[in-house]
Image (cartoon, rainbow, N blue to C red):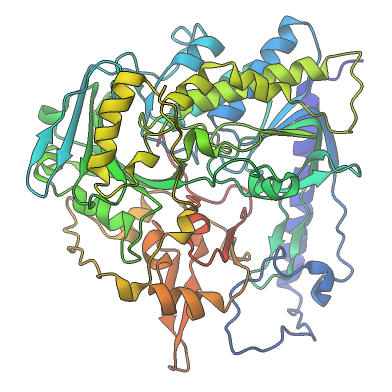
Length: 625
């Protein structure tokens, strides 16, 4: 008998409702019971304890966890997808399209850490519809929220007071003819609706915390995170174990610098034959502006001021047609910058005071803020994508076209190709797999034959070409000559500079950067900005920004680099405060502020920070970012 997918979903929901009821009863009982005092305390140390997460301090060695029920409920699917973004949802849709076309029963589950599909999505976004046309040809009739076709492209080099226009020739990466300006979170939400119509099971609010393995070493699936753990790492009365989702194939589409992908890189040595990934941080705001200044369909990009020529970065300003005079504006800074005093957030705020930008914003009202890291390594940094039991899709391995500043179309296409190759294997009645989790090398082969590979190969040298004495201007010259004439056919491939975390110079070798105070009209302070992101986490849980060694921040980051995490974090998560004794400083982690951008995990010069998922539903609550 065929079991409908709604049965499975209701079964999981019922189990979790039952657990929540038990948790609530325990909580009520706890109010009438004297709080427990554990006889065994953490050992005292001269370094204040910051990290209490079980990934650093295992629970099997903690007496407070003795006797706790640690068994997890397990469920089976054909395909489990981690991440409800463009790649994950495109994969899910394509799988169900194929299943329906071939009259096959296929259970596809998508787990997403955000409370709602699209709530953690942030991008510019100028969408190239190539993959969407392939996936859902009738997207217009289905009401896809692509409301603003690009009508005008502008590009400029900024100096402190002037704007130098640069012509955009046909064929150059910044030409956006045929593309759409979108609020990507709304588009992702729409993709989720299309997936559910086809029978995909979506589980928002469930954070995938752990990769599960078969005895033969192949991937078995994932486990969602436990809830009900106190800030000190002890179990609360409402503790609830996560659940396991097992699958024949698991697709990892967590987005840029996914924390499970990091584990898989090590487990299967996936980065053995590629260059280290390099990243940028993108900061974004939405504004409602004076209607007289509104030009729906216009895109504006710039490079130059306020960054120096050797700091990679740029800006965008998009005029959206969403029923009100709305603009999306943002600033991108390459995380290979060298000055520890640089603050991407404050560079963004300073940029808005350029005369050509301020004239658009004056009299307007800022309504949203957010930030996210993005992959910039391109072709050279693509890791091995397949391993027994799983595949990497989307921005997790990194398919962004850097000069275009676009990755949604390539992410979607990668998910579609993963779905097609997985479906062929899963439904092959004569398949004899050597491992319990299916190994699908055909995915990489399909990618290499697709337009993704051609597109990324053609622009592979543009980003690393900026590593020269002339910096920005040398890179632009290279792009103009070699990309315009050769379209990436030059017989060499340039290399990146190595890990972004290794690029900072000691503070003593750098000049502090004096940033102007925000005026509260065009530029703003950090905490009022974070408030606009809707970010929220359960306060009484272990900080999900974990440290491998609690002594490193003060002994190395503060001592050598003057505490750069205070400046590269776009949400005010990290701050150095005086010790209560008054004889030194300590790092304070305000984990509740975290917007899940992953910048700290990438840029930390000591590589001591490890970002892990907090309780499901925690994080930003973006509305169409």
